[in-house]
Image (tube, rainbow, N blue to C red; front, side, top):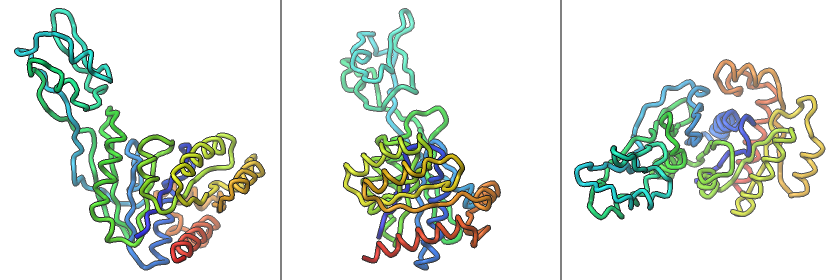
Length: 293
């Protein structure tokens, strides 16, 4: 089994589009079903491009303090010990909780001398599954208003890990950035596909991501998406990639890719002979070739 994590330093580079099209191309090359894991929990949209309706298979719950006002003597020890400052005392009203700030550490429950805080839980997100042609999908979805995106990412990844050995290839689609959730997705990867674009901001954020991948010591290839756009910083991008000794691929910008995106479908299905489709097929062949070595 091989885990391929597709990630990028900034939003809008096309990670999800590449993840879906690459998953289809890999399935066609290997003749195997691909497991696609969508960890972009704040904006999961893989299912829209796959044309499926995912079903909830698990609720993601975290600790929430339940305050017994009859036992609470308003000593304030829980307020002092709360690392997220989610608890506070209001004169003549008592102890209050800002649920969106609570980190679920349960410190308040442990330090309360009167046992006035009990264990409760709150739902912060959901794990969903769906099937499409050649691809099995697992995605995490953050509850609107919740800040527990790392917890939802971790729960979704752990859920998929229970059965992902059934697959020859697993593709992980991540949100942008270099935070804790991205680190988890990189740690389990056998290959990192870093997606960037030929812009100054794209290069800057890619450098940050590359530093993280390099520190973990994971094999990395780069896809420069939207290649051919007027005004792109192609020389600077190529110079950095060559200085770092990175293998990289071009994914040309064409109208067929844009048209397929508007239709909500993979470009490989809509326009199999488009330049962008040919680019994805080349990347898939190179990936499979590398896996055989």
